[in-house]
Image (cartoon, rainbow, N blue to C red; front, side, top):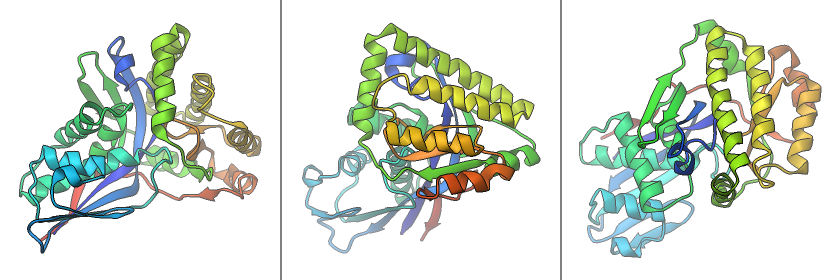
Length: 326
């Protein structure tokens, strides 16, 4: 039995520049962290050697790959040439459609589990590259590359996307005191709504491809990602929160699907209560509200957002890993 895990991520700046329609024209960059909330994949030999037994939100018992309904499972098993007689189950700390990169975390954990099942090792870059190929090239999902690399590597990273498709992952190194302060000052609140990431991202991609002003907005968001990296490394966390706010103002201008009146009310209430800045995690439209708020103001922010579910978390420093193998 193999138990594999990969963390979810919180993106701070540069989202959208990891999509090919942007970085093929101009290099992209994002600043993000992995959090200790995980997608888990369990792989085990199945008693019936002629069947695939798959368990997620539903259960499948399939004779062949063509009979498998779950696209990621089907194509990952095909990619790794896995024969019947295998059981794959998945569970997660947080549901999909909430802006924390759950689909890519699942893909990375699944690919790592399939390697381990065959007693093979895959590097973190290899896991991320294969997850990108699976989701973007094979399944044609309208997504970028940041989630796969964040899930594979873990940690707090500045990730660059080159025009030739290459990806550079640069860990952001802070003192232990500043890292602890940053971690404790980031709050996550679930807005209560899940959304179809494909729809939101497809609209953003179309906007970048057809509207030069929107493309330039993403360009400014990339520049802000560089600025926020440098701000973090300087140790000025209040300036980081202010930059987070500026980035959200840019992002919400890309399309009308990114925010709505309810989300705007939550965000404005949080800022009025003392949060310096924030944004919606992921593509937008729902999911988690990410806030930067100093500790002495957090009680008021929690009171202002008392109707929302807060998720406590810590940073993840391991990335994708095999948690158990026997």
